[in-house]
Structures are given as structure tokens and as C-alpha cells.
Amino acid sequence: MKKNVGTTDKVLRVVLGLALLSYVALGSGSLRFIGLVGIIPLLTALAGYCPVYTLFGLSTCPAKKGT
Image (cartoon, rainbow, N blue to C red; front, side, top):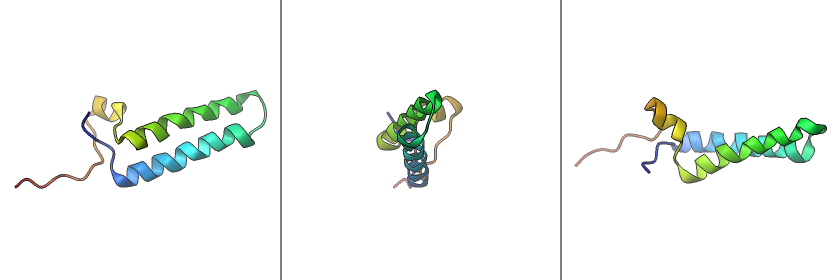
């Protein structure tokens, strides 16, 4: 897998993932388990790879300079 998630993108994904997961613990009602969706941005941040970016040909990684 070629990494396609940059540093800023990773930070945003971790923040979003943790916010969604906190809704599971702090939310009320039966819809609080929707917060489990927060696992997805956390996993993509840890892996540095997003399959959706691949589908659309996107990458937030900085371009590497050739030698």
C-alpha cells in the first residue's frame, strides 16, 4: 500500500475519530453506537492509507523530490 494520508490529514482524522468514539461513552440513547464509526478515521490515520482517496486519485502526502 502506498501511503496517501499526510500529517495534517492524520491529525484531523485522529481528532475526528476520538470525538466520534467519545460519543459512544458520553452520548445517550440508542443512536450513540453510531460513534463507533470513529474507528475508521483512526485506522486510516494509523495506516497512513485511505482507500477512498485511492478511488478518487487523491493524496495529501507531500510530494517526494527525485534525485
